[in-house]
Length: 157
Image (cartoon, rainbow, N blue to C red; front, side, top):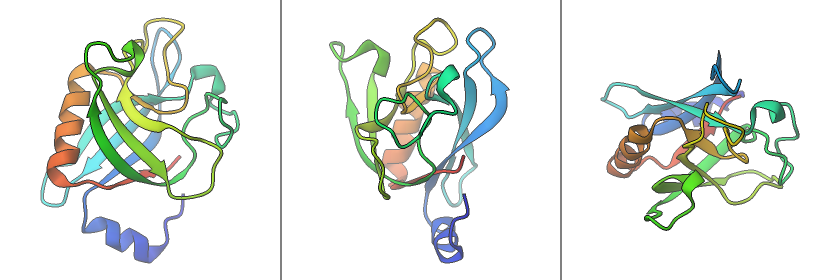
């Protein structure tokens, strides 16, 4: 994605999350591994392994609701960080970080959450959100986003 130069310069001075697809895959299920990178000015860059969409839906229409494709490329506003509690949906893990596209798309109810099935079974991957692979990463990410005031996610590919 080509981010306009002024926007790129503004993002360098503020914390930002960036999601990019890697060439790696989860061995058992074939889900592509995505790199969720957190850049906080003055701190080391942090990387979190994630999935987005389902392994067999990576080329589906990213703007169509229900497509189980990865997130559409673009800018997102990071919303509330919410604990889901013990009675929350098991496939969403203990924490939900809402994200809101800053462009027109048919996709709704998007977020960052844990994918407890990543690389394990038929339920590996997400319906289109960002699913972190490791449980401890979800808590770490939520704490860092909250502490740093990170408000922007860029989905690059």
